Length: 427
Image (cartoon, rainbow, N blue to C red):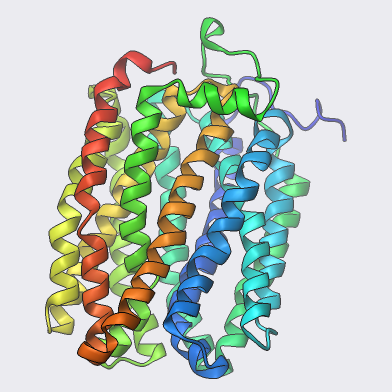
């Protein structure tokens, strides 16, 4: 089938939009199931392979995020110049196979190598998914499309943990990795053979459609020319540093500080976190278009307000001795993160020309994964090791509280980003 045959016309039927959205959301589900699943398998992996907290920090953080950062830019270039559906299918297959292979790892190095290949696959999948959503939904409805992606991310990040915890309890952490990887390969085949490519930039007016940059550097320069994007990159990197440092260690935190086992953690995170995530993402689907029609700056105002509220909520969760109270705080924190996620991604699509939208998403994910997911879990792990002689099992509690304290710095940059947003809108 030729490229022309596989590309949709300018007008898409609601059924085709819904089907394409469902496939993209399925890919997002497996992407975040893999990341979240690792977080509740930390303790059995550590015990089985005799790892330190610092090694776990490397495994959950920089082994994935550094690879993601290195491959994100070149794969984003393919997103902006090639067939996005085909790229998504290939990347999904790569990270799913790597996840399944992780179940056979015999030592730390082998596990790290599987995370490297997961990082390669996801580096191309996320920009392609976001670029596709940007061309499936009209600008006023785009927060809805992005929030549907957030629903799938919520399901993968939280509800899937129930199944991962139960599988790990019955078949060990190795069986859990295999169970997470195989379905993704099947979905990759479905995307590759049945999903069509929407017309690139179909909601952008002719006078704002930029010529495709000739190389990576000119594409990066085009992205950084937008002041909205510069502050968004800085702000989201800081917020992600705090959030990733917390989320990567949540399973271990509830085991060490509240005495839960792996199945109990999976159930707690999958219910309290899962319900909070789905409620937050569903709110984004419901209120996003209404707020965008009222004032497009709500795409950044809402995240600014939400992230400001997260700091006291997280500190309460880490420091309160009651597991019930910590669970309520977890519910609220996850709700806010998932409510705001679709708005952040939509705002990026709204200020960037179609020719560099994939690059913009890749640069956002580079900031998120290199600064956030890379440094966050590692530094929390190192600080926990440092505090362990004094605080014992509670060293992780205080290390996570210290990491979350700098989120206010990111909130300031989100506010600055909203100041430039209206003048830089192009779609």
